[in-house]
Amino acid sequence: MSKYIQNKNNLIQYFVKGIKKNDQLRIGVEHEKFLFNKKDLKRIDYDQIKKVFEILKDQGWKLEFEKEKVVGLKRKNQKITTEPGFQYELSGAPFKNIHSVCSENSTHFNELKDVLKSIDITTSSIAYDPFNKLTEIPKSPKERYKIMTSEMPKGGELSLDMMYKTAGIQINYDYTSEEDFEKKFKIGNYLAPLTIALFANSPFNENKLSGYLSYRGEVWQKTNRGGIMPITFEKVNFEKYIDHAINYPILFLKKNGKYHSPNGQTFNDFLKGNLSFLNGEKPTLKDFENHLGTIFTEVRIKQIIEFRSLDTCNFGCICNGPSFFTGLIYGSLDETYEIIKDWKKEEIMEAYLNAPKQGLNTLLHNKKLIDWGKIFLDLSKRGLEKRNELNKNGKNETIYLKHIEEIIINKKTRAEMLIEQFNKTKNLNFLVNHDENFSYSGFLS
Image (cartoon, rainbow, N blue to C red):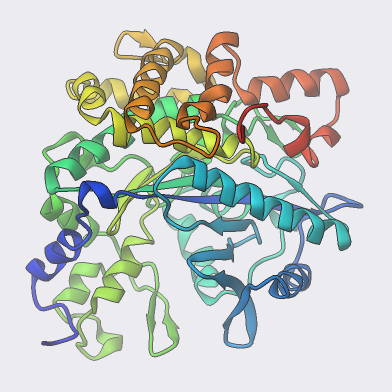
């Protein structure tokens, strides 16, 4: 059998192979955070991240290289990578429940904390760099980021802010059928306004208020290849997703260890053997997978469904976003879908555009997002109770919803708490190491 993609059915089969049985469903979380020099709050550079990686190597992590440059670490099925501006990302292992997701993050944060302390690096788990100008941020040596830095601004005015100044949380879910995929895909997209509002944690830019609760959310809306996919509002199946994805221009190509810059041609051109610089060569499934990873929409699929609308937050509250969606996606899927299925494109898109600024006061389908928050929190809780995944103390995953409950009871997001703090202090020093300052009790009980 040829290693090259022969026809569209090969692509459909790629997604079919992602189908899991109910007892195989897993949750994977990717979590980014900023690292700063303690003395001046400038972002760390390559030499410093290399030092972090080399210290972690002594704790069982294996260095990963691109050419002679260290670009990441691997340990079993965990990965540490860095984004274009050296945002630090832990890509966690896929787990059966939130207890394990939370425990993994807590364990790694403790491991990392000691390393950073030893080399005068500090952190802030906020979703948009509040201190530094775009021009001041050191750039990763990864080849593909160089190409992206040149290409991305052509289709979105804040694309470089996305690359260098944002940090998010991504939650990865499995699907059990094409119909199951469609429900999860639509829920992730239709609830993007609520996700942005509920997890808003980026109200500052260059040491001032930005006017947004989630400036990260605003940036991603003005990013090339971002936003909510237009096919979301149609009947969606694997073929529809493929037809949409292959018509994106190729962002970069890696062949035989060499990166090729784009020339405006689409992945569909590649499928037809029409890329002149490759002498008519056709793509492999690996090329297709790489291409899927260059689409930066709020929800996207590979052989998993990725929810990508959450502002990053600290290693305590990281448990609550995944628990909230796990309750909906794995525990109350049909009930959630029943609520959202008749929402109209226009009302969703209007709420999506308003949510970064208006937060939980945003209107969607005749209700404020704060009211939808209550409804979906209740559904999530019921879904987690139904799952009945218990920790060693016999508690189920609802223990991780505390942060969201507090937001809804107090009608105040994390971003609004930070703004209140800023109005008192008139500076942003409190953001450094605010993992501890803004922790919520009960996450690991």
